[in-house]
Length: 148
Image (cartoon, rainbow, N blue to C red; front, side):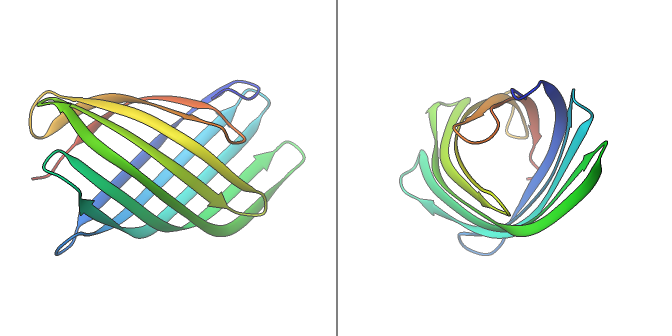
């Protein structure tokens, strides 16, 4: 995390319902070097439009709950987040994603995400993502597991 330095983790998942609808959820926990901890819990749903055989348009709406702990006290807030973007395969084993995201809490924040994944198999992928343009810039290295 680029803002006084820090690191953390994100655990996210989605579940495909009938048709193009999905359920989504995530837990993000960040620890900044200035003894500030940030936790974000997200729950919501979305829609996936199969634009073409290799490209999907994805949008989500999520209820979010944020908590910040500092040496001087803590605060929490509830709001919503909305995202819209596209994902597509540039080769049989490489997928790229891009989205615009808006997080509306006490202070609103809009940021862009660029990401890519390499699929080792139909169930396992690893990738990177970059979120920038908002209050924080983050670089993420992660893995995905698909229960297909």
